Length: 81
Image (cartoon, rainbow, N blue to C red; front, side):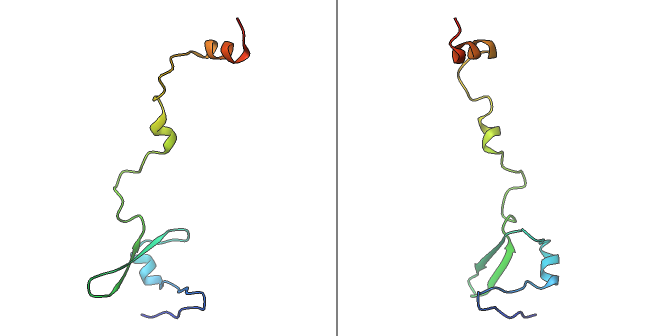
């Protein structure tokens, strides 16, 4: 299988390869060169752990040390006494 490179350095990944790697538009791919000098194409997410990484907000949830309730916080913000 071969593909022609454009002036911009782009190539079309053949359908058989896209299907084998389960690639679809928007997926990222990874290019590596092995010890034999061959280029290896893989899904960029193929090396990640099976469990998805928690987003930054989920990791921060419950981490605050302030023990105010909503009523106290609103009074502070409104300068109520």
